[in-house]
Length: 273
Image 1 (cartoon, rainbow, N blue to C red):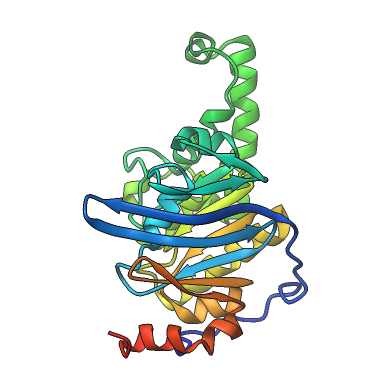
Image 2: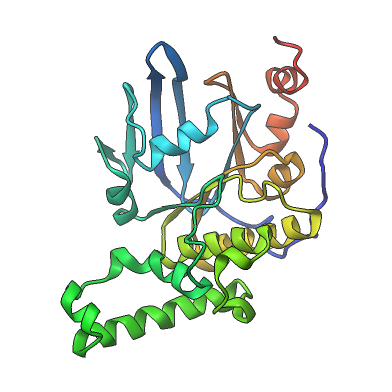
Protein backbone atom coordinates (compact mmCIF):
# COMPACT_ATOMS: atom_id res chain seq x y z
CA UNK A 1 0.00 0.00 0.00
CA UNK A 2 2.81 2.39 -0.77
CA UNK A 3 1.88 5.81 -2.03
CA UNK A 4 1.80 6.05 -5.81
CA UNK A 5 1.90 9.82 -5.92
CA UNK A 6 2.35 12.73 -3.56
CA UNK A 7 -0.06 15.62 -3.78
CA UNK A 8 0.87 19.19 -2.99
CA UNK A 9 -0.30 20.46 0.37
CA UNK A 10 -3.71 22.09 0.28
CA UNK A 11 -4.44 24.90 2.73
CA UNK A 12 -7.14 24.03 5.22
CA UNK A 13 -7.36 20.29 4.55
CA UNK A 14 -5.73 19.34 7.84
CA UNK A 15 -8.14 21.60 9.69
CA UNK A 16 -11.29 20.19 8.07
CA UNK A 17 -13.83 19.17 10.68
CA UNK A 18 -16.49 16.55 9.98
CA UNK A 19 -19.97 17.13 11.40
CA UNK A 20 -22.79 14.83 12.42
CA UNK A 21 -23.59 11.52 10.77
CA UNK A 22 -25.75 12.14 7.69
CA UNK A 23 -25.63 8.65 6.15
CA UNK A 24 -25.37 5.34 7.95
CA UNK A 25 -25.38 1.80 6.62
CA UNK A 26 -26.22 -0.87 9.17
CA UNK A 27 -25.61 -4.60 8.58
CA UNK A 28 -25.97 -4.37 4.81
CA UNK A 29 -26.04 -7.68 2.91
CA UNK A 30 -26.52 -8.01 -0.84
CA UNK A 31 -26.55 -11.18 -2.93
CA UNK A 32 -27.19 -12.02 -6.56
CA UNK A 33 -28.56 -15.53 -6.54
CA UNK A 34 -25.99 -17.55 -4.63
CA UNK A 35 -23.25 -14.95 -5.02
CA UNK A 36 -22.75 -12.72 -1.98
CA UNK A 37 -21.63 -9.25 -3.01
CA UNK A 38 -21.83 -7.65 0.47
CA UNK A 39 -22.07 -9.36 3.86
CA UNK A 40 -23.13 -7.60 7.08
CA UNK A 41 -21.37 -4.29 6.37
CA UNK A 42 -21.82 -1.27 8.63
CA UNK A 43 -20.25 2.17 8.46
CA UNK A 44 -21.31 5.81 8.51
CA UNK A 45 -20.56 9.02 6.65
CA UNK A 46 -20.28 12.36 8.43
CA UNK A 47 -21.19 15.74 7.07
CA UNK A 48 -18.38 17.53 5.21
CA UNK A 49 -15.95 14.61 5.26
CA UNK A 50 -14.23 12.74 2.44
CA UNK A 51 -14.99 9.07 3.09
CA UNK A 52 -13.04 6.57 0.99
CA UNK A 53 -14.03 3.00 0.20
CA UNK A 54 -11.11 0.83 -0.87
CA UNK A 55 -10.39 -2.82 -1.49
CA UNK A 56 -9.04 -5.25 -4.09
CA UNK A 57 -10.95 -5.90 -7.32
CA UNK A 58 -14.21 -7.69 -6.62
CA UNK A 59 -14.38 -6.47 -3.03
CA UNK A 60 -17.89 -5.01 -3.43
CA UNK A 61 -17.04 -1.31 -3.59
CA UNK A 62 -19.20 -0.36 -6.58
CA UNK A 63 -22.00 -2.57 -5.25
CA UNK A 64 -21.93 -0.50 -2.07
CA UNK A 65 -22.28 2.75 -4.02
CA UNK A 66 -25.14 1.18 -5.96
CA UNK A 67 -26.84 0.37 -2.66
CA UNK A 68 -26.40 3.94 -1.43
CA UNK A 69 -27.97 5.57 -4.50
CA UNK A 70 -30.76 3.02 -4.92
CA UNK A 71 -29.60 1.00 -7.94
CA UNK A 72 -29.47 -2.14 -5.76
CA UNK A 73 -31.74 -2.99 -2.85
CA UNK A 74 -30.01 -5.01 -0.12
CA UNK A 75 -31.70 -8.15 1.16
CA UNK A 76 -30.75 -7.24 4.72
CA UNK A 77 -29.79 -4.13 6.63
CA UNK A 78 -30.90 -0.53 7.06
CA UNK A 79 -29.84 2.68 5.33
CA UNK A 80 -30.45 5.91 7.22
CA UNK A 81 -30.26 9.31 5.58
CA UNK A 82 -30.26 12.22 8.03
CA UNK A 83 -31.30 9.74 10.71
CA UNK A 84 -34.39 8.49 8.88
CA UNK A 85 -34.62 4.90 7.58
CA UNK A 86 -34.71 4.77 3.80
CA UNK A 87 -36.63 1.87 2.33
CA UNK A 88 -36.80 0.95 -1.34
CA UNK A 89 -35.50 4.23 -2.68
CA UNK A 90 -35.00 4.46 -6.45
CA UNK A 91 -32.04 6.32 -8.03
CA UNK A 92 -34.16 9.33 -9.03
CA UNK A 93 -35.46 9.56 -5.45
CA UNK A 94 -31.90 9.40 -4.14
CA UNK A 95 -31.00 12.24 -6.51
CA UNK A 96 -33.93 14.31 -5.23
CA UNK A 97 -32.76 13.70 -1.67
CA UNK A 98 -29.35 15.23 -2.47
CA UNK A 99 -27.21 12.28 -3.60
CA UNK A 100 -25.31 12.63 -6.90
CA UNK A 101 -23.11 10.06 -8.60
CA UNK A 102 -20.31 9.63 -11.13
CA UNK A 103 -19.47 6.27 -12.65
CA UNK A 104 -16.41 4.09 -13.14
CA UNK A 105 -17.15 4.02 -16.88
CA UNK A 106 -17.92 7.47 -18.24
CA UNK A 107 -21.66 7.90 -18.82
CA UNK A 108 -21.97 11.07 -20.89
CA UNK A 109 -23.89 12.02 -24.05
CA UNK A 110 -20.96 11.95 -26.47
CA UNK A 111 -22.69 13.90 -29.26
CA UNK A 112 -23.75 16.75 -26.97
CA UNK A 113 -21.60 19.69 -25.94
CA UNK A 114 -19.97 20.08 -22.55
CA UNK A 115 -22.52 22.77 -21.66
CA UNK A 116 -25.49 20.61 -22.60
CA UNK A 117 -24.12 17.57 -20.77
CA UNK A 118 -23.72 19.56 -17.58
CA UNK A 119 -27.19 21.08 -18.08
CA UNK A 120 -28.68 17.58 -17.76
CA UNK A 121 -27.56 17.67 -14.14
CA UNK A 122 -30.19 20.38 -13.56
CA UNK A 123 -33.12 18.26 -14.80
CA UNK A 124 -34.51 17.48 -11.36
CA UNK A 125 -34.56 21.18 -10.51
CA UNK A 126 -36.75 22.17 -13.48
CA UNK A 127 -40.18 23.30 -12.27
CA UNK A 128 -41.92 24.62 -15.37
CA UNK A 129 -43.84 22.23 -17.61
CA UNK A 130 -42.56 20.53 -20.74
CA UNK A 131 -44.58 22.76 -23.08
CA UNK A 132 -43.17 26.02 -21.72
CA UNK A 133 -39.68 24.52 -21.83
CA UNK A 134 -40.17 23.39 -25.44
CA UNK A 135 -41.57 26.79 -26.51
CA UNK A 136 -38.72 28.56 -24.66
CA UNK A 137 -41.19 31.25 -23.60
CA UNK A 138 -42.12 33.14 -20.45
CA UNK A 139 -41.43 31.23 -17.20
CA UNK A 140 -39.78 28.40 -19.14
CA UNK A 141 -37.29 30.76 -20.76
CA UNK A 142 -36.51 32.53 -17.49
CA UNK A 143 -35.98 29.26 -15.66
CA UNK A 144 -33.66 27.86 -18.33
CA UNK A 145 -31.59 31.04 -18.29
CA UNK A 146 -31.25 30.72 -14.52
CA UNK A 147 -30.16 27.07 -14.84
CA UNK A 148 -27.63 28.06 -17.50
CA UNK A 149 -26.16 30.66 -15.16
CA UNK A 150 -25.70 27.98 -12.51
CA UNK A 151 -24.09 25.65 -15.05
CA UNK A 152 -21.71 28.41 -16.15
CA UNK A 153 -20.57 28.70 -12.53
CA UNK A 154 -19.74 24.99 -12.54
CA UNK A 155 -17.87 25.36 -15.84
CA UNK A 156 -15.84 28.25 -14.42
CA UNK A 157 -15.12 26.28 -11.23
CA UNK A 158 -13.79 23.30 -13.21
CA UNK A 159 -11.78 25.55 -15.55
CA UNK A 160 -13.35 24.17 -18.74
CA UNK A 161 -14.60 27.40 -20.28
CA UNK A 162 -12.53 26.79 -23.42
CA UNK A 163 -14.37 23.54 -24.23
CA UNK A 164 -17.90 24.52 -23.16
CA UNK A 165 -19.26 24.22 -26.73
CA UNK A 166 -17.19 21.18 -27.73
CA UNK A 167 -18.96 17.82 -28.20
CA UNK A 168 -17.88 15.58 -25.33
CA UNK A 169 -16.94 12.73 -27.67
CA UNK A 170 -14.06 14.81 -29.05
CA UNK A 171 -12.47 15.38 -25.64
CA UNK A 172 -9.59 13.41 -24.11
CA UNK A 173 -10.43 11.00 -21.31
CA UNK A 174 -9.31 13.23 -18.45
CA UNK A 175 -11.51 16.13 -19.56
CA UNK A 176 -14.49 13.81 -20.03
CA UNK A 177 -14.06 12.76 -16.40
CA UNK A 178 -14.08 16.42 -15.40
CA UNK A 179 -17.29 17.02 -17.38
CA UNK A 180 -18.94 14.08 -15.62
CA UNK A 181 -17.96 15.62 -12.29
CA UNK A 182 -19.48 18.89 -13.50
CA UNK A 183 -22.78 17.22 -14.34
CA UNK A 184 -22.94 15.77 -10.82
CA UNK A 185 -22.09 19.15 -9.26
CA UNK A 186 -24.81 20.86 -11.31
CA UNK A 187 -27.37 18.97 -9.21
CA UNK A 188 -26.02 20.75 -6.09
CA UNK A 189 -25.70 17.51 -4.09
CA UNK A 190 -25.24 17.21 -0.36
CA UNK A 191 -23.51 13.84 -0.86
CA UNK A 192 -21.35 13.16 -3.91
CA UNK A 193 -20.52 9.54 -4.79
CA UNK A 194 -17.39 9.19 -6.92
CA UNK A 195 -16.65 5.78 -8.45
CA UNK A 196 -12.95 5.73 -9.39
CA UNK A 197 -12.83 9.34 -10.61
CA UNK A 198 -9.12 9.05 -11.40
CA UNK A 199 -9.08 5.68 -13.16
CA UNK A 200 -7.02 5.80 -16.36
CA UNK A 201 -5.56 9.24 -15.67
CA UNK A 202 -1.93 10.27 -15.80
CA UNK A 203 -0.24 11.91 -12.81
CA UNK A 204 -1.01 15.48 -13.89
CA UNK A 205 -4.68 14.68 -14.51
CA UNK A 206 -4.91 12.98 -11.10
CA UNK A 207 -3.46 16.03 -9.40
CA UNK A 208 -6.03 18.25 -11.10
CA UNK A 209 -8.90 15.95 -10.13
CA UNK A 210 -7.69 15.76 -6.53
CA UNK A 211 -7.59 19.55 -6.38
CA UNK A 212 -11.16 19.79 -7.66
CA UNK A 213 -12.41 17.15 -5.22
CA UNK A 214 -10.81 18.96 -2.29
CA UNK A 215 -12.19 22.29 -3.52
CA UNK A 216 -15.71 20.84 -3.86
CA UNK A 217 -15.47 19.59 -0.30
CA UNK A 218 -14.05 22.82 1.09
CA UNK A 219 -15.85 25.50 -0.91
CA UNK A 220 -19.26 23.87 -1.33
CA UNK A 221 -19.25 21.86 1.90
CA UNK A 222 -20.16 18.73 -0.09
CA UNK A 223 -19.76 15.38 1.63
CA UNK A 224 -17.86 12.97 -0.61
CA UNK A 225 -17.85 9.17 -0.70
CA UNK A 226 -15.00 8.04 -2.91
CA UNK A 227 -13.88 4.74 -4.44
CA UNK A 228 -10.27 4.88 -5.56
CA UNK A 229 -7.46 2.37 -6.21
CA UNK A 230 -4.58 4.84 -5.98
CA UNK A 231 -3.51 4.55 -2.36
CA UNK A 232 -1.46 7.71 -2.54
CA UNK A 233 -4.61 9.65 -3.42
CA UNK A 234 -6.70 7.90 -0.76
CA UNK A 235 -4.24 8.48 2.04
CA UNK A 236 -3.66 12.11 1.07
CA UNK A 237 -7.23 13.39 0.71
CA UNK A 238 -9.47 11.14 2.85
CA UNK A 239 -10.66 11.78 6.39
CA UNK A 240 -11.70 8.17 7.00
CA UNK A 241 -11.36 4.96 5.02
CA UNK A 242 -13.47 1.80 5.02
CA UNK A 243 -11.82 -1.32 3.56
CA UNK A 244 -13.75 -4.14 1.89
CA UNK A 245 -12.48 -7.56 0.86
CA UNK A 246 -14.63 -10.26 -0.73
CA UNK A 247 -17.76 -8.33 0.29
CA UNK A 248 -16.81 -8.02 3.97
CA UNK A 249 -15.51 -5.08 5.95
CA UNK A 250 -11.96 -5.68 7.20
CA UNK A 251 -10.96 -2.18 8.26
CA UNK A 252 -12.37 1.22 9.12
CA UNK A 253 -10.67 4.33 10.46
CA UNK A 254 -8.34 7.18 9.64
CA UNK A 255 -5.80 6.71 6.84
CA UNK A 256 -3.05 6.12 9.41
CA UNK A 257 -5.14 3.51 11.24
CA UNK A 258 -5.98 1.70 8.03
CA UNK A 259 -2.40 1.85 6.79
CA UNK A 260 -1.21 -0.13 9.82
CA UNK A 261 -4.15 -2.59 9.98
CA UNK A 262 -2.71 -6.08 9.54
CA UNK A 263 -5.89 -7.45 7.90
CA UNK A 264 -5.74 -4.68 5.31
CA UNK A 265 -2.06 -5.32 4.67
CA UNK A 266 -2.73 -9.03 4.21
CA UNK A 267 -5.59 -8.40 1.78
CA UNK A 268 -3.55 -6.07 -0.40
CA UNK A 269 -0.47 -8.29 -0.36
CA UNK A 270 -2.52 -11.41 -0.94
CA UNK A 271 -1.25 -13.08 2.25
CA UNK A 272 -4.67 -13.90 3.66
CA UNK A 273 -5.79 -15.88 0.62
